[in-house]
Length: 151
Image (cartoon, rainbow, N blue to C red; front, side, top):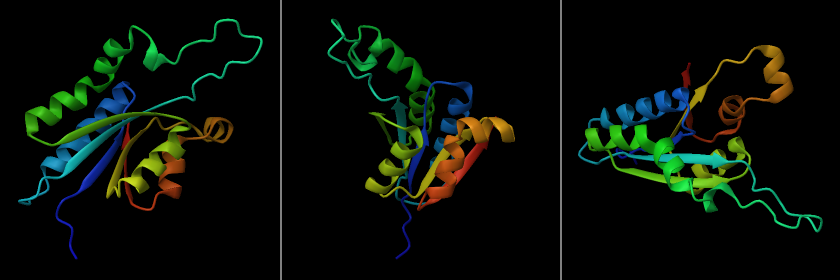
């Protein structure tokens, strides 16, 4: 059966490139001609929370439990929330911990996402081999379509 309503996942981290990807995702959702509204999911993946050891007297609290978190979260999701609101596109945001590529793929599978929109910095061959590339891993392993936004 043809699914006229699309679920679009976009990786958000507050950088200019992720803001550009968020814009593309919302425009994509708004541009699908259908009586059914497409929905955009904005996902922020934070690194794994630091684990305390028996030698730590006062372990660091995860960023989501710190005082400045509300302000930081508002800045990170500002662009996607603004554009989605202006274009009347339903938006759901989420914050998860873990490896960015793995978490994006896991979220996409769990929510039955139709398209993943992700930014790519265009690292050179050597940097990509040494550091890895989130967008490359997502493109390679995703079970749905992936739209890569170049910086």
